[in-house]
Image (cartoon, rainbow over all chains, first blue to last red; front, top):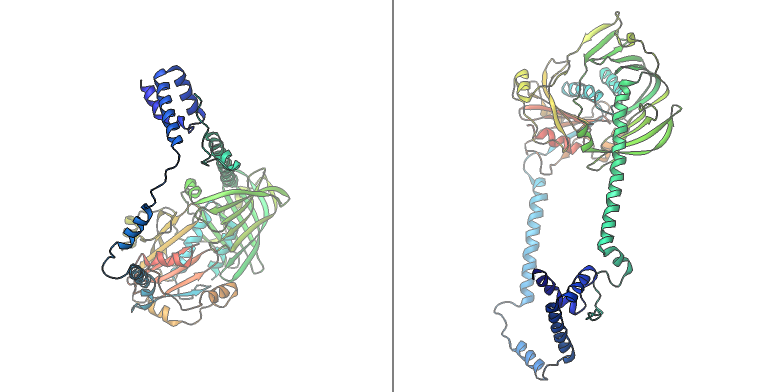
Length: 163
Length: 382
């Protein structure tokens, strides 16, 4: 019986030609051997034929004028017109966006604190004792990294030593 | 009993032959299989490229080599170049450089790095740093691909490219000897995509007998032993060694992991800094710090505004002009505290060094990173 239940769930779709491939074959094989499901399918097909023979129904002629009159007579909501309210919403969104942009991007430019200054040079300055020490350590470490170009690193070491 | 014909409604897979072809369950399985095959082939090629790279690393230790090479590198705005005679065997290396200006020798005997200048008469020896190479870290951060075939020094080679997985230009181009795996040519590109160094063998012989004496410092050389970072320390051990609390940067670029802490000695002043060393598997990032002394005048650094030595040389100058030049203000994009003082960025091509005078510390970061990244790193320390 559980198989019949499963097949019956698919019968309506089968009845209108909605099943294909393996699913269709499964239903077809089952109804060949199951009289109860065959009966169910026949009933479904009869119902389908009945609905199909009825043809399209049309509404009584007074229906649409009545609907139209009901829409026109509907009381408008109090307050501002809808168009104005949508403008207010848009204005609110724009204001919030401007505020966000201001906070994220503009605020740092108007900070009362001094800006960070980066002086860019090509060579280390004479009095700097910190950078050469770290640079030397960096080159020594570079020497041992995988893919290191020892010959070029050696050239850089020699230049640093001479600088 | 046959079901009625299906209504003329166009469902998925109906009405266009191609869509129908691709929509069936079998077609989907075929597509998935094709995608899987494509992925497997790509991964196999990538794995093969990495295999070639790691093989080249071991070849440098396995194969004995004698040859000549030409090397060049960009330092700041200057291009340095030299030729060198090479001896390599058993993981040891000797380079006898010859440039238009002078000659010098560099020996890596496996434990020490020795640089000897005949004109100085002194050899500087420092412990050879050993990076705990984590190949999976490199493969996690970079991708490798085979880029073609060529000839270098009269030998057939396979070209391999290494690129950051996070995107960006090629970092390395390597030309590997097809017989031995040895690297016969390599090019290094920095984070901005500029070629910063290149080395190429002009002649090479493999399997030659290299005397062990080549890697020994001659007795008549005067040796200046320089302290160096041979083994790493934890942050707490490093704090004890340098005598102040070492602060780890709150910001480190993605992909980098802490390799260890080291004591860094300043040659001229005798000061010591605490250095934290990071790696992404192929690149190194050094972040050193020391407490500010009375003689440190960070504000003067930023306010001076005059031209630094070499500031108008070569391509570095052009680059600076393009980015706003000296005294350029990094007006913060959400990073750093507002009370920052000056920073000096030395752009040496392969790496940039940024020195920063914080409230309490002098911080230096050196690495092949963008200026923005370096600023974020140093300002996250103090």
